[in-house]
Length: 193
Image (cartoon, rainbow, N blue to C red):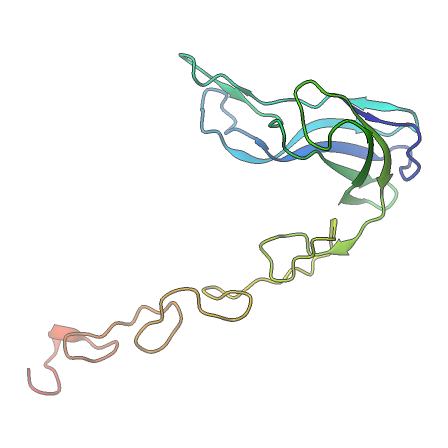
């Protein structure tokens, strides 16, 4: 169980609290499909009333080793606990910074975690780790993420093959007549061959 203490001062009544495992078992939607699909999964939810709030996080269940086995979505033990807040007054979602006064910051099957404070101040920036300007300190996406051009890294370096015209990711090849992007054997080569 995850307990949000009544000492938390940065939440307003009505704020929504979601407990997530960003690398939990999400499954395919079919419990008998044992694909073991991993991703972000909501494992617990509650609404702040100003009083202590206890949220039970749901663990994944993997019974795929049995005949007609199945799997159910949920957190995976030892993954970090992630809390996201929907700030009802600002109408924004942000990832909270937690002050844990008891227990582990990671999911455990039989554990008790007490959160005594939440830093509810949103730190705006690019939160996509795949973006060139990823900000590891940001917890709220501000829409400024910038991505590398296709076939290039963030520094502008070509990361795929370069064709005979020097085009990054191009598909031109040298034909039988030794001509880049030529028509090849369907025409006579310049040297008559």
